[in-house]
View 1 (spheres, rainbow, N blue to C red):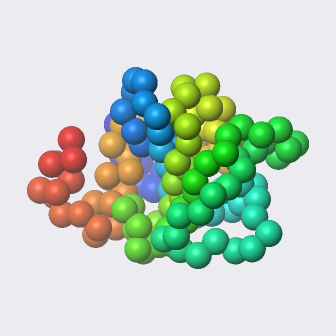
View 2 (cartoon, rainbow, N blue to C red):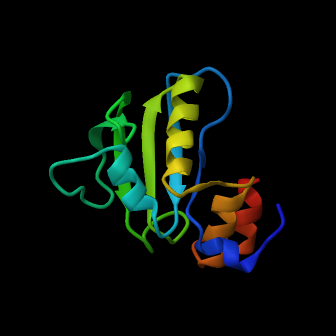
Length: 136
């Protein structure tokens, strides 16, 4: 991945779990629009507390349901990347993961490059160089 200084202020999205079959998949958002995008994907009648996992219906803006999931907001700097971050803990279907990522992209996120969450953690002082290298 090539580093562009202006790109660290974009909101990024990607699947944070390994490819392959699994019961659960995690889609992560990080950046200034992460929480706003998540509110559109998983509307809630009451605000979500930071670092508290809660059940949510993940849906398209038109109301079509994508999954019944768990969602956690992590307000920066107390997150892996040091930015506002959101994780969607979804059922492990590739179709569901791809649909949630596609909707997040339509709402303003861009697909994260390989290692980009860890790069942001390093640049924001959440990991030192040895820790960042160990992630790979």
